[in-house]
Image (tube, each protein chain N blue to C red):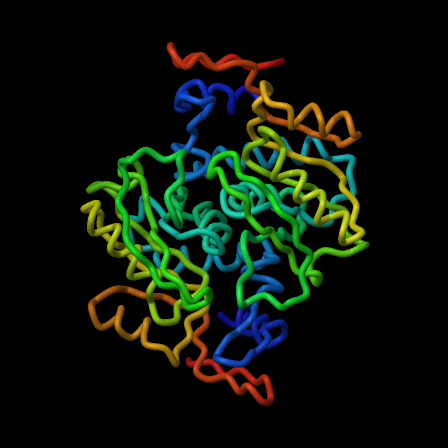
Amino acid sequence: MELLEKRIQEDGVVKKGGVLKVDNFLNHQMDIALFNEIGKEFKRLFADRPVNKILTIEASGIGIACITAQYFQVPVVFAKKTQSINLDGEVYSTKIESFTHKRVYDVIVSKKYLGPKDRILIIDDFLANGCAVNGLLDLIECAGASVEGIGIVIEKGQQMGGRLLREKGCRVESLAVIERMDEETGEIFFRH
Amino acid sequence: MELLEKRIQEDGVVKKGGVLKVDNFLNHQMDIALFNEIGKEFKRLFADRPVNKILTIEASGIGIACITAQYFQVPVVFAKKTQSINLDGEVYSTKIESFTHKRVYDVIVSKKYLGPKDRILIIDDFLANGCAVNGLLDLIECAGASVEGIGIVIEKGQQMGGRLLREKGCRVESLAVIERMDEETGEIFFRH
């Protein structure tokens, strides 16, 4: 997606350890006009799929998922990190290791909002090693729901997550795939 | 807001300890069509205010803030709970006590995305004792930004948060204000 790649080139900052900071427009400050273009593109890519619900994970997936949901006219469910007293005991749960935060989270979704009739589009901001998406797939499998596709804003192509998901048959559509980043010069190269 | 009150009556569940569960449409599963009506209403209520940014707090404020931002055509910034290695050291921080989770969070926002030129509309899903909103006001004050208003989806009128904010001069607009909930019958009464 050209508009997105351009924005990553302009505002993305390459940090040590393979970190790409895009908090200017994607996951801290959020450019809602860009999110609308992202949502439209996900709809175009998954137009053939009978999606009836979008699943994401807190926190940075929520904004993109909500804007995208307008184009599919479906509700969004977000998986929650750690148990809240406001949720019933009736949850599906899994564990997800965070690359960014270097810790393991318990992630839950209420059984009321994920079930066998649900045809899920997973939406998230980043795909790196795939831990978050695999956790969501785990929750979907527990619920007996089906996965119609996985929509990712930025995939880090150097890491294995995307390849492994595609190898096991998932339809993954990433709007920008990072081929390589140069920590010295700050240059970002995309895969096409 | 009649549509919202109707939905709370239909789908809200009153739990022990003054807890109102609205995770069917507001803060776990999210009804995006309803969020659009909520966003329009916030725009109507704050149409006279020169808002240039919406500030919310993760996680359940993000969806409403993003949908609402479309009507103001402004970006959203969400304050983050606990430090992330993906954020620079350059942050404003405060502490917020969570009524729901019975714990204290460190909450941060990058100095890059909150500054003296920002005219902020705070958006959140719930207002009870006001801890979250007061934390956000603290961050805004640290940044030298100004507050144009506070838009809340559900205010728990039995708790002090809303009254204290209004007493200190904040313009608070709550789309539904709970007057009283009956834990025995599950009835919910609104303030008008």
